[in-house]
Image (cartoon, rainbow, N blue to C red; front, side):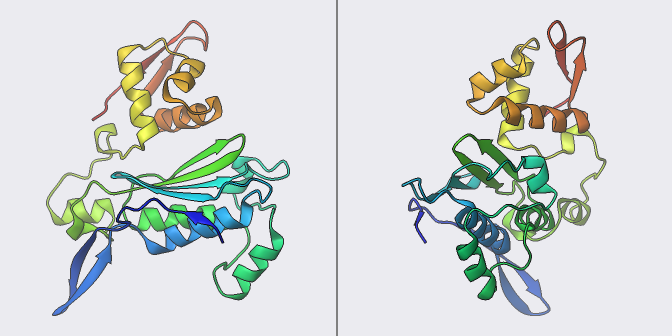
Amino acid sequence: MLVDVPFRPLHRTGAKFEGVQRKEVYELPVDAIREMIVNAECHRNMTDESCVQVAIYDDRLEVTSPGGLYNGLTFEEAIEGHSKLRNRAIANAFSQIGLIEAWGTGLQRIQSAAKEYGLPDVEFIEMPESFRVNLYRSSLPMDSIGETSVEHRQKNGVATVDTPLNLELNSTQIKIIELLSANSNMTGVDLSEAIGISKRNIEVNLKKLKEKGVLVRHGSSKGGYWEVKAHE
């Protein structure tokens, strides 16, 4: 299994106390990281000479698999649990050693693990020749890692009203908000070119921002404009 990992510490650790015992807590959920790498290997394109790439940044862990979604599978189908295996032999081997619990659940398990940790939304980026998963670090203090963001706010007396200002946004959504704040007439194509990701990915994030109440679209797709309601 070839995985290219730039040298940088993967985890910062914190601690929580159970009774009188100190228990070390990882900053990112290990289960999610395992799923990200296992999925990347099971679905990678073996005819591509590049490796599965694991990149570690200050704000996120990024896993990129060579080869897009396989055999006509759409992202919507993949996130709902449908699976079309590109490398069945590898998947069967991983299943036999207990690294895969059920077919088609990998993306959902990554999302669930991040949510349980109180992390921002996992970002899935579909590209023509690759597929990337971004697992974002929490902005909360290390002693709150493993709690949900609501639990942390309640424990520290912080308001938990679900307003746009309290929503956690991924880096793409933040860039979209910054660009639309400067120019509300930008189209999906404009945003795609400015950020450097596919128009499809832009549309997915625009939809999420509208659902969260951060963006409102006025007018038609060609002659209208965006209103940024609130953001941090």
